[in-house]
Length: 320
Ligand SMILES: Cc1cc2nc3c(=O)[nH]c(=O)nc-3n(C[C@H](O)[C@H](O)[C@H](O)COP(=O)(O)OP(=O)(O)OC[C@H]3O[C@@H](n4cnc5c(N)ncnc54)[C@H](O)[C@@H]3O)c2cc1C
Image 1 (tube, rainbow, N blue to C red):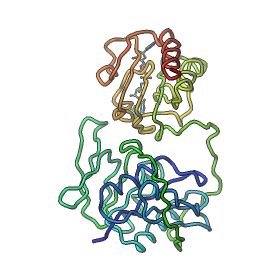
Image 2 (image 1 turned 45 degrees about the horizontal axis):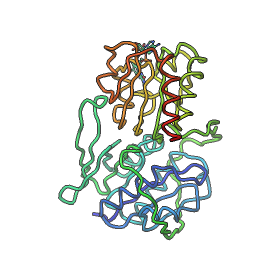
Image 3 (image 1 turned 135 degrees about the vertical axis):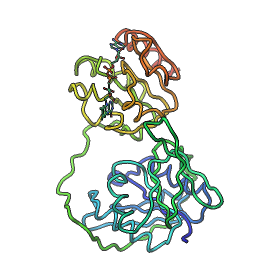
């Protein structure tokens, strides 16, 4: 049985994602022993000490500048060997979805995936995860050591940094199992926060009716309140918004403080991606639309009329 928690701290070109601080802080709050952050492809990370990291291990060189599953898994394997943690935490995003099953298979570990709550019960970690598009919640215990959990971004909150610096040391890794090679990576052109990390989201449905409709209604409303634009699959399939904007079962799972659904009916596959949002505002001209059963606030109206009014009101409220 190990001691402490190893946190995979994700970053983009050396800038840590919000989830890195969030996971480190949650690991610290659990009080299971020392918290070690693993940083792959960047030599820094002392600032993670401000959120509770006791030490930072970095893996650089070779193929680490771009995410590859072989490097990711080999680095975590080496870090587990170095610190012998009781648990490993990663953000429940694309990297963990790709890498954690392989790590689990390689080391014979169990994974509690996409948990939105974590608590200690008799010294063991118990994660809670939504099932069946959020219709049920399952409590998950992992009997392997270390126990691996992937945590949904924005579910735990980020405290203010204490400003403390954690000691950083390099970890030597020999990469094995490389069946693929990443030859290039296309960075997103937009500077808005990624949907999975966004604190506010404004999503548009099929009824935006055109790319122009999406660009003139959804993007300005999102921009006005510092939100990231999202979309239903029907909106994406129709070519009104890019696939990277899709929220739902086959899109991104989001967990913002505020989710505004504009002209989205609220089918189960869309709900699967946004149901855990803290406040849901729905605008739909059909009072019987299923989205209203999940909305904190509902507006029965034509979104093309309400959208600009909402934008002006929210802008004024934020300015005041
Ligand atoms: C395997 C599978 C996976 C899927 N994955 C996803 C997924 O990841 N994400 C996802 O979103 N969907 C997904 N879907 C599709 C999903 O079932 C729905 O078809 C989709 O979510 C509907 O999108 P929508 O709400 O934009 O469109 P619709 O269901 O057509 O709803 C449009 C809504 O707009 C309202 N409306 C129309 N005009 C206005 C107006 N002027 N003002 C206000 N309201 C208006 C209507 O009343 C209606 O409620 C998946 C489906 C399958 C089978």
